Length: 276
Image (cartoon, rainbow, N blue to C red; front, side, top):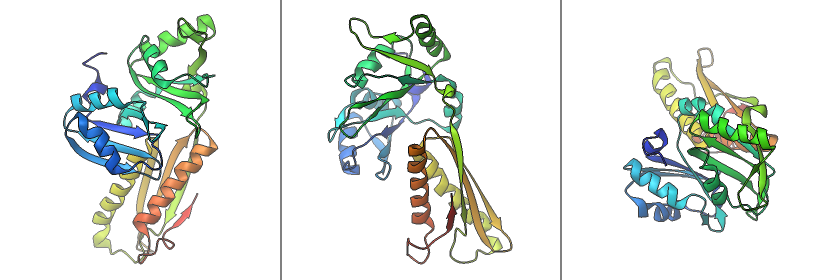
């Protein structure tokens, strides 16, 4: 593995596909074996977490040792946390994997794929029994790696693992058109906000939506504005998604976080008007 790649400089890991019963304490016990943990954020509602280590070496050792292990019987997936700019830069390096055999282990596929180049992330979709659903995604670090595997697929009509009868298909992820949707949120605060509080309230709103954005790890944008007439704030968020199930899950997370952070008078059943 290339030791000077950008992903090996990351100190923060993004953990996906956690079992619903995984706790923050369990995650801490698993990851502290590899070094000093600066921070650990657990997002149980969408079964993800962020773990920040003191050094890149600690983070990468944890990733290499724990990626694809089964935690409480469910395979976890670990990638290096990426900023919006990094996600945008690498979006053309995302490939869709199709016709994945039910019994193909993720670690076996990962080890095979390294022959084409360094891997940023690899995710196979699983059912509740931890079996493959038939497709997944891989992101390489370079365009050269993507071109290499796509060229082989074009020549052979498939990608085959050596010394086995296992094969699968692969194509550019942007050939599957992503959809976009938006959510409007009106009246973020229960009471009127004075004009001299606009700046501080804007900062707190932005901080909340930045946390939601970090949690989701999708192409997510938000815009907030102060309504001078109503002396309150409204917000618009938009994001891309692949299918209706993903859209439903993302909308649910956004709505739950808005209700949690902007509820009225301590009652989470009352709060801003949300239109999706």
